[in-house]
Amino acid sequence: MSATGRRNLAANSMNFDDDESIPLLTERLTLPALDLDFALPAVEQAVQSEPGPAVTATVLPPVELPPPPPIPPTAALPTPEEIRDMALQAVLDGLPAQMDTLVSGQLRSAVDATVAQLSTGANQALRASLDG
Image (cartoon, rainbow, N blue to C red; front, top):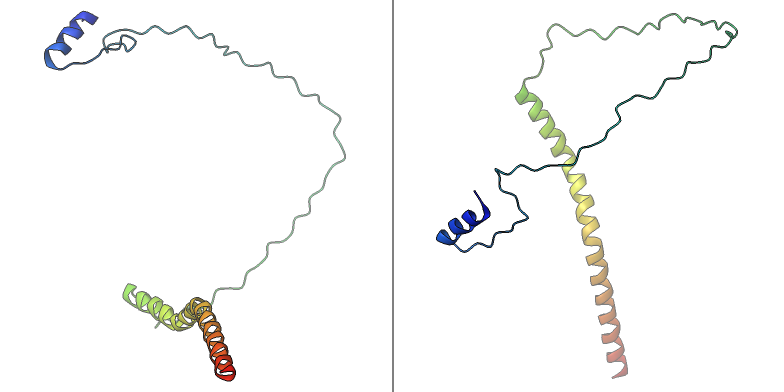
């Protein structure tokens, strides 16, 4: 379809401004040829030198690990519910200490500011009563 045909179709439906620099999907684009060099560089031969003194390796005997502790035959593996309960209990056990740390850290600045404000107000009231 030519550019004039595109304009006529566009004019019949809506008013579009065609950009001639945008190719149609049916047009073929020609790109410049690429000149790529796929040749590999020559590999230089390694220079062989005289062998050095022989290196001897000392082989150490393998280290024997102690056997793992035996599992009692009556001990059963915990169920997923038991594992969940143990994890929740561990979290609950550590929660009070963490809460104390968080609350004291966040309230310390507020308490310090309030004490400073109260002491300033008390000093002013005391001076006013002594001067008056």
